[in-house]
Image 1 (tube, rainbow, N blue to C red):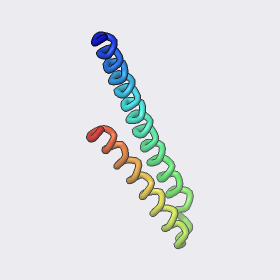
Image 2 (image 1 turned 60 degrees about the horizontal axis):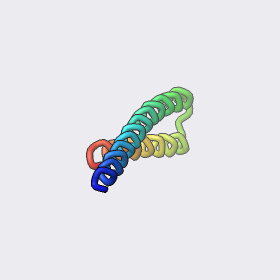
Image 3 (image 1 turned 90 degrees about the vertical axis):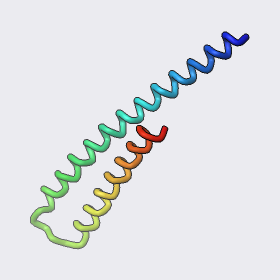
Image 4 (image 1 turned 120 degrees about the vertical axis):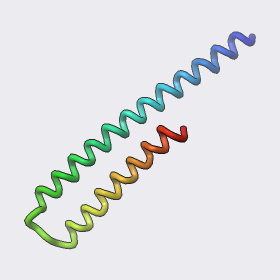
Length: 78
């Protein structure tokens, strides 16, 4: 019976580790895509100076910061 319990614990740890790695990879790729999108928005709106653009950039950078913080939490704490 102990062997079955040990195998169950080992398989749960492997599934948890695989899920954690997949989440880290997804968030890393997502943050790279976010940076590219922010750069494209900045390039497209370079001639237009308005408060709306400032708000778009604020939310874009805030979004990127949240993604990077979640990536850090996932990789360090979990």
